[in-house]
Length: 448
Image (cartoon, rainbow, N blue to C red; front, side, top):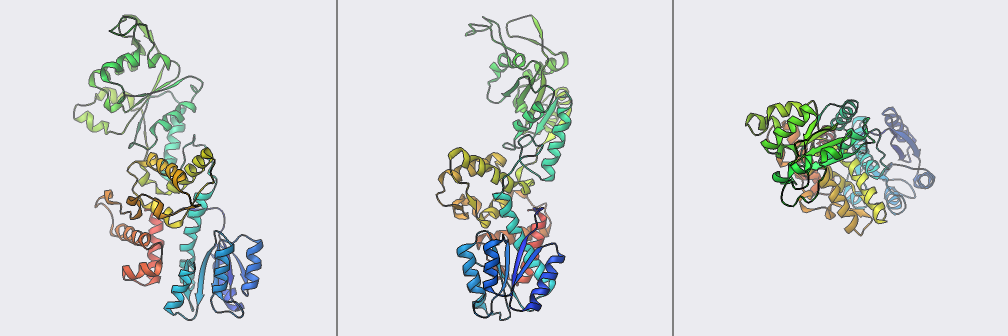
């Protein structure tokens, strides 16, 4: 569940003073900021001069009714949710309120528990919108966006790694931001003024990797017309980042081990030993421990590299960060392209949060960039997302889940398919709206 320090501001509208007092007392005790209005005209006056997140309005009132207020809000007030309250629970009235733009409705008489449950559901929607539309400023995170427990653990390890010269092994799936973490460690360390050199071990053929890392002298091999320094020399007194170290051959692994042990290199074609003072940070998406057991990776090298182990969790395991990242990328690319920062509908945000993200942060960044470029409307909706995201069952999670998790996931998927319509979702699920509301609250707390 996403938290917010700013209170949710609620306006309660009812011609019954007694009803207003009850609503105000119950919501204020739950830490909401509550104002009241005894009619539509008074409510409009409040809305014109005050920011309100949520309006709870009775439908039947003299002169102007709740539907009049609902239409006024939808035509004149942005980012305000509306809950209708009625003592006459006719299905056509409920359907009409939803069609006109109400988020939910309550039937009188309702209990305090029912009121708080309904308001809590709307609160989550408001917080999602606040999160994704707010200006995100990274704290002491070296430009890495996130506030989830998993990413905060990464921040703590970055701080520890930056304060030492120990070798670091960064593990994580492709697209999680391993090089970003490596740069954070380097630029947070005492070597920040020296070079940071990034080398992708997969991109360089094994026959050339030794020359690229250690350099070569003139005439060392065909085509070596001049002597050339290697990456270790370029990174002297700084940091070398060896990405995808799991793809290095056993022969190259042996040479890397000698460099780590002796702090010395030999340029290809030269017998002269050169000392280097280079910190080594490596990264991999592979399971090096399993490769060691299979004889595919040297155990002694693994121990040398894995002094500090930084594991970056995949995006599906830190879903609380998805909205922050979406906001950050939307702001970034909108500014780069000179466009207005797009809004995201609540259903689109829920779809993004539910998606499994096999490509992790890189996939999310690419998607948001594309949406900023190709979407012409001011709001990005579910229909603008790739088809695979419109109905998002997290199939890759496997069977190691509780029954409650599976149920919550199914409920969220049904909600996505009906555009957030609780009445329709309850019909499909075969439960009443009160039960659906309670189950949705539990699902939000699971942070699926």
